Image 1 (cartoon, protein in one colour):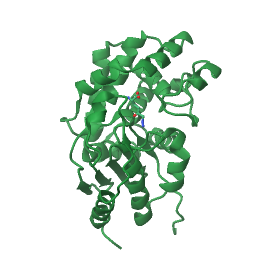
Image 2: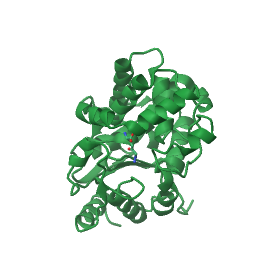
Image 3: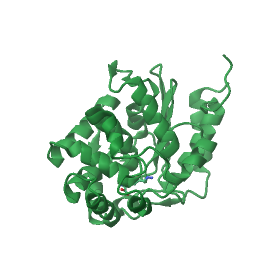
Amino acid sequence: MQTLQAVLDEIVAEMSAQADRGEVATYIPQLGKIDPGKFGIAVVLNDGSSAVAGDAEEPFSVQSISKVFTLALALGRVGDSLWNRVGREPSGTPFNSIVQLEREEGIPRNPFINAGAIVVSDILLAGHQPREAIGEILSFVRTVADDDTIVIDADVANSERVTGYRNFALANYLKGFGNLHHAPEMTLGVYFHHCAIAMSCLQLANAGRFLASAGMVPSTGHTVVSSERARRVNALMLTCGHYDGSGEFAFRVGIPGKSGVGGGILAIVPGVASIAVWSPGLNARGNSMLGSIALEQLTRRMNWSIFSSRSA
Ligand code: DON
């Protein structure tokens, strides 16, 4: 069998030959400036070893991938009462859709669509100033990545705020249904800033290790969430992590994954590895086009799909 490094090098070579790389998101103007030719991939195994290839050490905007960390943090703060305000079902709608909110009376389908993540931000804001809540989220990400150099890109956060009409609409709608406890601009301040966290593939794969290791950060030995909670976050990533493309991702890649419009994907092979991939061009559903293809190649070659039959 090929080594993991050889598989990653082969994937990078294949991806650099791809002519159709999808479209870089431009609705957040700052993201529209990113070179669509970038491609990076990093895998951190549970035994502590890692392999990287391509632009794996260049920071990018993690965007919606940050929703995995805010969910884990908010569950730690309020426990299962979070589920009184956010559902756990796939939406089958785009990440910024408002249609279900009216019919379902202000309860977002899941914590990964924008409406659900805005409620999670609202939970994290309770008892804090926005600056403190943002600081806590960044500190949690640094803890799970075991890396204090991770920062928020303030230009991206600002770029998103000035063009964030849809998110303001969602927050106002949530407020109208009584499912937002703070002023929309306060909660969105938290939301925009966590979406603007910048990480490289290697940093992001490190940050995801606790989900592959039953809630423990292997490099420090600290348990940050219970194993049951890690398992449930993985389940939500599988069913909801790619919005209306979640079924297709499960079908092709077969592991929990969370995408972001910056072109990153965090993917977890429970008990085995945490993987991050970055290619800025998106498919029609707002998920990284080459990132998804690369993960499909990787899980196939390593036999990592959670749906593969394994001998006992
Ligand atoms: O709220 C937004 O639109 C962005 N900050 C995040 C959206 C996102 O990453 C969707 N993922 N593919």
